[in-house]
Length: 511
Figure 1: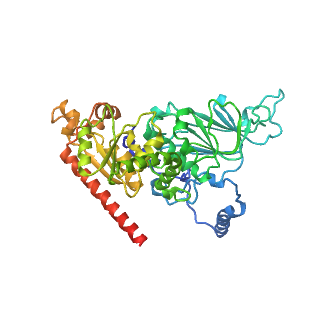
Figure 2 (figure 1 turned 30 degrees about the horizontal axis):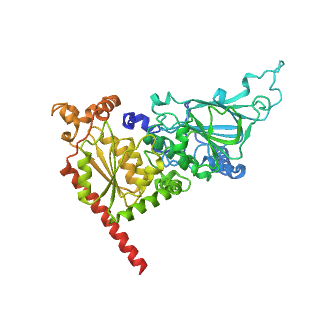
Figure 3 (figure 1 turned 90 degrees about the vertical axis):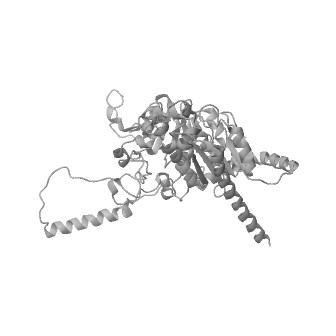
């Protein structure tokens, strides 16, 4: 994972990680001219032309059944603080047109409308316009100017990160005047739009699977109410199986494996690429219906509810047999190897003494996601050391759950940016626990005054490889339990206070 702060200030100004639904166009005059006093006729003519330009959209506008396809929100501020723009880029493209928005720091996105046909052998998507007389030369071969527009795009949401983008398959989007009847006859005709994206890159890491894939897919496609087809580059069967419950709530159609499916799929509207707002979040101010990360969380509830009903019934039956009083449930996301809590058994005992019912969860790559969801959705608190597994905070209930993140040395910025802030946006009570040098295994490897212990930021400034090698791969944590116990007590008091309020509210409603 590469920190955004490594980008230059100039890069952020030219796109940054703000969600920009529009591209600000600044008109400039490349030539020098001498200012003159306008004559009356010129002034009147200029006024007339201004009125025409203002009213033209009302006279010549057209509608499309998929016009909302291009509504990804309106940028609040333009480059260098320009005034707001009234419509997003590509908001009204005509048939036979390709429009690409490359203004965003995180991802490119292209729109196509018209007679669209996939051609996986050449990694291309063709957009055909009507054949024009004279398009053939004497020998019947195509003329070189058949290609009207040619765009290249890698549909993955880490545009700024060259190393991972080099691994992403590139698509050619080609607009041509050639009649497709001979070359690319339709094998499958779709009457709904398509969204094309890649499941390559950092796929295999749960944080990136949600942050770079699932949430951007929700942002881009949820407005279609499942009437959309997903076309995937670098298709993985296990990924589709793992996230199938979510995909089925975003699309009513089976996904297409672009690379292996050599059939020609025909569409009238296609989006290539995904929108991304920020780390594990949805910005309601740029969503068509003001959806937020809470709405995405509700979708997860709907997706996994059918699967976990049976699991919940079994668990409730077991609890009744045990006849235990209801205690706040704390889930510890356990790690092995780097950034593991080496005194985890003491943590479990201390949490139970505070009053929690403790469950230790050790997710494996083969663990069914619905089971992880069930554990965290029914929990009151979660503890984990900074890492990709913290993405599972999305499974916790907003408004009443506590997320405690243990922050190892050298990971302050990443822990807060990737998980702390998203947790607060989701509505969780977030408690960050920054370990002291003595709680790190690195304390036994370096002198007390070594920058590794004394000034981790100086090491981080040297580059991501230093951070990864020292603080992520070689560090374990031994919690100072008297100090950490204070966080457990704070979490317990917060949860029991909410439980009391909920209990009193239910009593008053029943009376």
